[in-house]
Length: 442
Figure 1 (cartoon, rainbow, N blue to C red):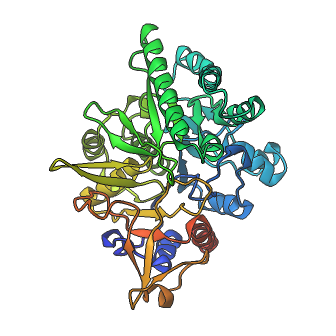
Figure 2: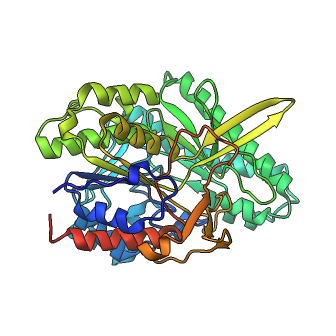
Figure 3: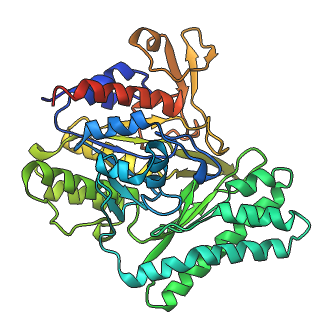
């Protein structure tokens, strides 16, 4: 069964009914989806995240057409598997029912199937050993900062926040400063200094790994960020009084970028359907090229167009900013989902497969670094959308008049085809309905 539509030519479309039809009727479908902000609310403390069991069961109904692609991790104290265990009572229940969310975590280097088997393709023991040391170094470094700013927070408050901020992920140890932004809301200059202090630690860790002959093993992912500099390094987004800026400082394995994960998932998906890996069985995000152009060329060279699925990419973190100083205009395009969605879009354009880019507005969560979509009615008055799917009649009277990026960025290469102003509850409602409609047909 196949399905064709024009959603891939839309921008900021509210045609949720048409997306529902595509998801439920397309036989050769690859759904690649982020997690935080897309199927779960964004929260300051990852340990408080919750997931709807009905959504998880719907994801299983989509198998083998659904895969996650996240910078978080499947395993560990703050991994998604723990959230699933809380939702269903235990990890044994999740595993027995095959309800683990399959796909790539840690930016593309941590693989998991739906029964919970986890591996790290292309990662060495030396690299994993180095990563084990990072959480403790994050804790020590933040404590040192507050030793020199001892009047800012009490010792007990520092320890509480340090514990929440140091994420001991296996493949992507992270400093998450959301809790510090909250407690330092009245002292934004101190929080800004803390941002730079943690950035300094990340650079120090890169140097330490280089000294151990692992100069090409790691990089730092800043979320959200201001894009990449000329050397390909991500740029920290400074905080303001109303915007937490970069909150996640992820020390990650080189190659662990979502756009490389798209190609790895596509390689796996085509194998499932044809019995042949277009890029070989051992291809992984770590062995993938590093630029958008090279990744696109790799797909063009090695994949048979008749095997390619319709890819639907779903994310929530895309931004841009345009600044003019002394007559010079600088455009910064960032967001941890930007590059994987852009690759999904361009693969679809090259092969004429109608790939669809979906954006979920996560500005309603606890994290203050998301710009909300602006929705207006036919008269041009701003309206708010609820968490229910939009039917065709309602959608035709509404328009998204501004997306998550800077409206002055007139050359934005990424086209967000379908958007969900109502956030993850609105998206999940469509997702679950599509799974229910799809199950008896395929």
